[in-house]
Length: 469
Ligand code: B12
Image (cartoon, rainbow, N blue to C red):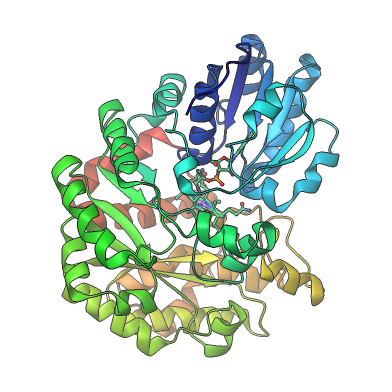
């Protein structure tokens, strides 16, 4: 891409959380194409505001998920207080679903859509909501990982990195910000197909992976396509991808799918993919048919989930079953226990993760909660690791649901009897125990995927991150 060079300015990119801020890496990459000076700042450091001010940026860019929006505002206000002329811009999932955040006086620009097409406008002083065009995924720059790791070195040696080939999802789950209807509402049906359901070019993906390997220690890559088996080209794309990945990258992948598509994909594609994948996450989400319907997953059922689990394990895959509890039903705790018992039937002894339902802006569930006047819990901040569901339930139910999220991995892996599940979900865990359980859960997942190596990696993780529990 050739770009006429605007004058060189300084942009601070503010990163939240313990994981790579993938979207903001692309934004940095785009700024580099405009020959801009960029620096990433780690908002997990208490000194982030002072650090950013000291660098005297002209622009500050944010890409917070909903969970990080309040802390992002606090950092923004701290910086603007000392540098009132700095221009702030927001993008990413939360900003795209809530462009009205432009009414917050410290926010100067909100970008709805890909970064491509926005930078020239921001640099030339345009303010307000900037809507960019969705062309196709070729329009993505190379992520600025070199600069990101230079500025936030703790991320360079994180054992797991993230990559994707497809930006959107063919499914339409009620709780998800990347559900197809949500994206179609925002950008239109054609743009959804052209941009979100198409793939980034293979050589670009491989170049990105090579860059990751050259910049730090990486033990696995989480391939964050919402459903690895989606795409009309899947039967030709997968074998080509596996061949190149195996030859040129060689790191194991952790991928995600659904029962439907892992039953539909051919034996050949499944056997081929196994060469580079060590674990597949399968979204079970709920067991009761009416709960699945509420999540807009009426197309799924326990029989299909079981068949998919058996098929995947017969090809040698480790499977991580995933479920959501805290649904807006009359008896959320019973619903959750039925889900856990379903996980035990589908994958006895399997690794699983049980998450509390979070209600994100722009989703069908958000509308459902508004329409049905369901109150949302202030203590739930959009982070599933907190274990607290978004919807307000009586305190005793919230506690049990939180315990089900904490103990779900243990209940399923060790096939705990219902009697004991019912006893254990009543316990009041101290913070210390709660953290120990979260660590135990994390340990089981990492070791399940990476074997003995996972034990060393887990020790590193414990040293390098603040765990949310
Ligand atoms: C990759 C991914 C992850 C990775 C990396 C997360 C990260 N911090 O980057 C992992 C697996 C760690 C992860 C974890 C979580 N995730 Co996640 N994740 C995704 C996924 C699959 C892809 C997002 C992505 O990177 N896309 C590719 C990039 C390039 O696209 P993008 O972010 O939209 O950015 C483009 C534009 O928006 C624009 N842009 C973005 N920011 C900015 C800023 C400026 C200034 C400008 C100009 C432009 C711009 O430029 C980019 C390139 O065009 C999405 C689902 C999906 N398919 O979208 C969920 C998703 C983003 N995750 C989600 C959630 C909730 C989480 C968690 C909070 C879950 C939890 N555990 O509680 C955690 C948070 C962890 C953390 N500490 O950050 C939600 C977010 C919903 C919301 N409204 O907040 C999503 C949409 C899935 C869902 N359930 O709805 N996630």
